Structures are given as structure tokens and as C-alpha cells.
Image (cartoon, rainbow, N blue to C red; front, side):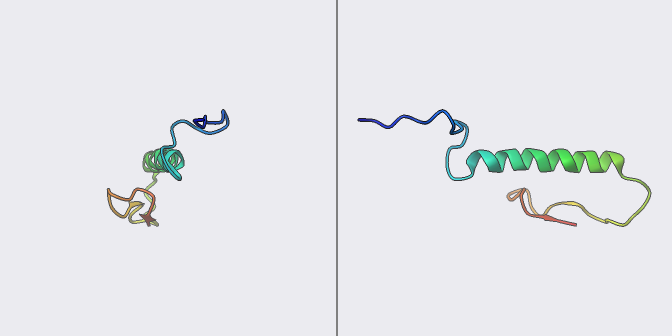
Length: 61
């Protein structure tokens, strides 16, 4: 008998952490955009962003 997906599981997650990684990436990009818009003349942070385009979840500041 085939298994059915329980209603509590997200259908967007294609693998372990699939949907949550996408959500985290969207949230981080939104936060970075907000930070850039609110940035003042203070130069306390020289760079804020992902280390590479391939891994948007690993950032440096």
C-alpha cells in the first residue's frame, strides 16, 4: 500500500531542509536589502553578505 504524505508536512520541501533552506535564503536576502537601505554614514561594517553566490547561507561581515 503506498504511503500518503501527512497534512502537517510541507509539500515544498523536496529533501532534508529543502524548504527551510529556501525560506532562510529569502529571509537573509530581505534582511540584507533592509540593512543596505537603512545604512548610515557609519562605516562600522565594511562588508555584509554571503561569502559566495553558491552558498547564500554562509555570510561574512
